[in-house]
Length: 95
Image 1: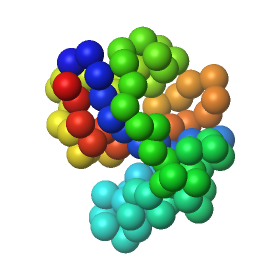
Image 2: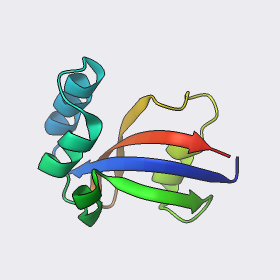
Image 3: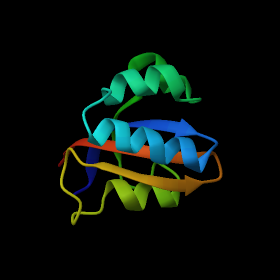
């Protein structure tokens, strides 16, 4: 896969990231709603959407998680730690 479409939620706190992941996985909250409420990234305005991007465009830890073919599309990935904080990532397509 060379390109992916994904959304993410960026928070500073690992505990919050884990709680949000559990809430999303349990179906208590929608990924996009959680992003709008909690994500500190400007993408939060679009429900965390980062659109479609190529391999190597994001920071390495993020890139590696997004393009890991072992992880099925539609799975909430993370928390993935980068210099920005803790990310939960939702890949909606890989091509």
